Image 1 (cartoon, rainbow, N blue to C red):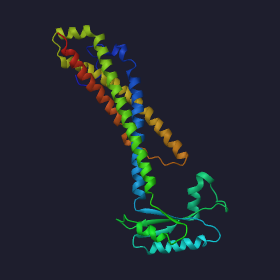
Image 2: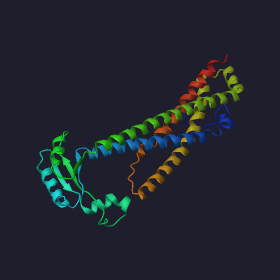
Image 3: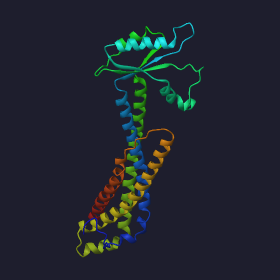
Image 4: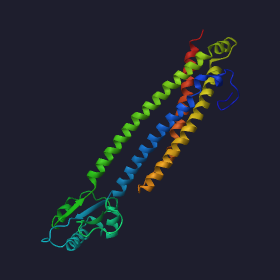
Length: 288
């Protein structure tokens, strides 16, 4: 009888109370494991996207100084002329007022910025391909008062370190969840075999092979795990949709890796079948 058959098994495992709550337990494990896997790998994907987006780009900041210094617009023009004349720079464009308002909107709200606010001028710089050494460009900008060059390196290193920490924690938690699932499945299969040991011994006596009996247990665990993972997968999908909606309303761009959703349900179903197979054969091997 194939694994996917729903015919009534010879061993009445479907009436066993020990597996009544297994689908709900597997559903909870599926939700936790899926959320951690999808969110953490989505974070890793986002960090990689930020790194690629910022690769080859730097920002020049011209700070506002006191009234005795050269006016800010003149210093911006001097910096632009210096940048555009540099052999390592492809393009250099000042950040407009509208873009500055958008950047500062989370702190000051939408609308024009207060006149008394000392907002620095920003210049977006794109380097030429394969340029890695910008030490000369940094030194050249020292001739412009208040000019600072930011290559985003320290910020990206911190973000990358945080993402790697999150992935490490998620990996440990996933291993703990998988370990707990395996232990639970082992206990459940052993309990089911103890509850039906008379039927199993009778089948053994009339000539049923260990493979036939183990197949009954595998099929039972397969359908229980399918029910649990389907429920857990639906709950995890719903939670992720809510998370994306709330993030979108807050102005955050969350790129969820939706293709990862079937990974943990598939893994837990495979674990249920493999665990049932090995535990059943080990226990059947102990029978006289």
